[in-house]
Figure 1 (spheres, rainbow, N blue to C red):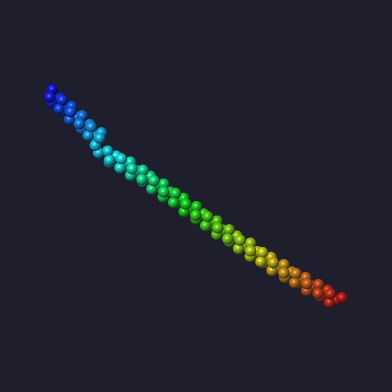
Figure 2: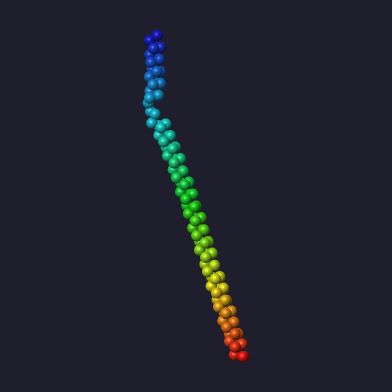
Length: 99
């Protein structure tokens, strides 16, 4: 009977030791897992931000190139218009000279 009581006490103390003992390892593992998840989320956010910035930069470059093309077209149209006006004035002057 003494052996049974001693064995039961030993088992109870062992269970109590497991319940109250080294709980840091599971908590550290959970904390480490949570930190790893947080780090992965931060890296994913950074990658998404980098992609958004790259897309914004590309859109700005396209916009700038478009504006340059529009300006070049306007300049060419103005040059052609000025040349046509000069030719017209020349023709008008020739007509006036004939009179």
